[in-house]
Length: 330
Image (cartoon, rainbow, N blue to C red; front, side):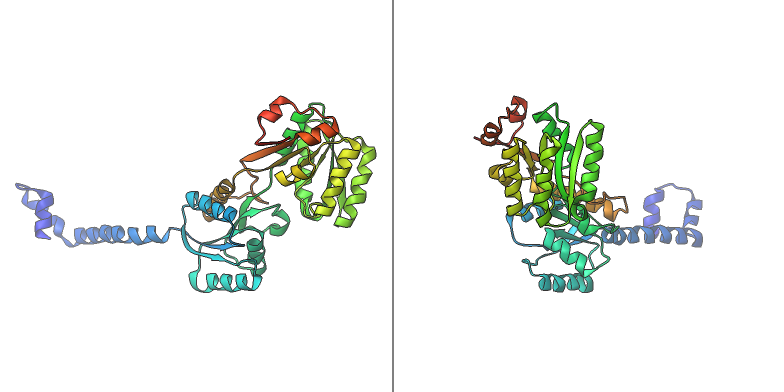
């Protein structure tokens, strides 16, 4: 201590400087030293830990995880694959709770999200790669995430580019599945002087009669929403038959739907960016910040245009829309 004191006071320092080694100064030095020592472990413990539950082993999910790791700022302590097996998922989640105690669980894919919800853990959870997660998650405050949904704004933007005189858009949906999304779309459309002509159904069997009832409504376009009630292949087939028979262009949610008969389709373009969005939601959730109910909408989208369908419908697709398309089917 004497040498340390001399090093700080320097040669020729007044003798009174040695009083700094008195009991009061010692206590002060000890307090500072203790604080310095404690700072390191506290900072280390402040690093958030994440355990990942994968629905299945697919490239798209791996890309979402890579995006999550880029921005989450958290340390991954486990990465488990349930392979579509809910019993296995339950065992994995039990181990997370009992042994690992992560600060957050990252659920990748709808099966993983369903497994977490059924497990009932209070651990904060972020999901990714889930289509229309709102009805699943409900009002849970400890769950956030990044959906695969394209925002209603983007969908309406595309329809307006196709037809600047657009005024009436037909929508068949299930209130329990996509009610909040449709109401949000109605508000957006109303601000643009567009009316959504809606038909609410509760089963796939009701979807086809509801769709046929739109024939007399003078709609300018048909919007297929991300609702599992209307996404069954047999129901989708009727959407495209309706589109041809009534010369009404349909907007779908995937390239596959454009190949099946939709004139246009807007879908997500980057699974990695959906993962990044989930990472951003994780940071907010762990920091105690507000997160978006129902998940975020995708930022990077791609547009598919089917010119074969356009010719059958007698619709001319504007060059500006073709220029922004990621894929053109001709």
